Image (cartoon, rainbow, N blue to C red; front, side, top):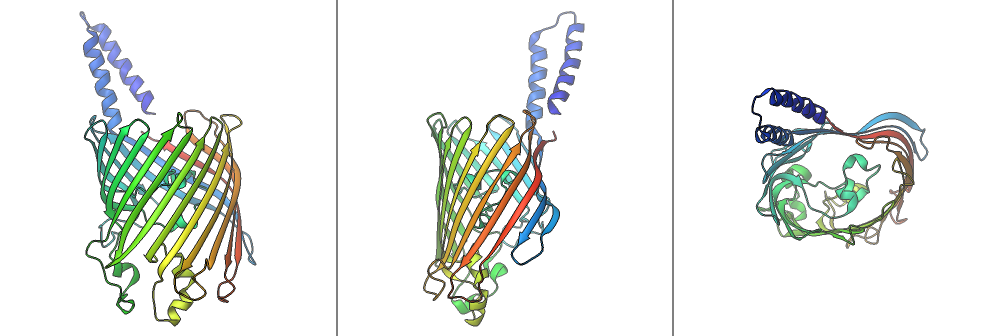
Length: 386
């Protein structure tokens, strides 16, 4: 839409230009340049993923319904050659302010970036934590089903980032953010009986490397971080994304590991609710998660993308009997096809199958294996409204 507005205004300018007795190219070019800069200051997008789903859960009737899985509004622009901004809001998530950062979890981005030099960019405000991995880094509307690991993460935080690009195609990020949106007690309640106290500096420290090699045929998205979960309680996370990127075929391998002094992801705590209640506790401690994601994509023609993805995830709780040796194993398997009808529109029509299977240790009778199957017919669309 914006390019048509630009063309129309440019035509009006040109009419006025030729009507002058002594026209100069400089005046006309300045007007066009000014208009282009104005347009670059305001860009509005709608991010949409919606589908008709048929979901089959074990021992339950199949459920069929229309779902709006992703619906986000994004506004961003370049105010000057050095100053830019970005704002993105989820329209189907709570907006009530959280106790620590005073922003709703619906706000993904609200930051200002300053390009200090050709190699250094500074960012301040609410932003995504700079974890690695290609699935983590992908636009959410293009993900048919997240891993449990990524789906459980809170990763939009207030903080600051230094982006350093020493040479072309090699980028390093150094980031310090809050490690949560709310205070510890507001999330978990009183944990004093477990000897857990609120930290005065609930921060996360992350180093990220994004690399491109062999004309972007081999790419990396790696990161390591330390998070202050509570007083004298620290967690670490390692994320490694590696991609082989050919003209018509892409293969991506993501590995994620979290060693959590407190169960920040909450997956083990949810599954172990019965044990925690019996032992007068609210949250597991010393939890380890591992996640592996392998995805292959093939484009026989520019209009079609065929994909397949597999996931394997484990969870363990140290020094808790029956929960300490990968008590939870999760499998994911999916495949499908995407049709991309327009070269100049980020629109995909897709048909996808998603299967999940969860296997628990036999030592915990309350945890039963189960699986789900889903078939989705839907649309992914990043609409550039202005």
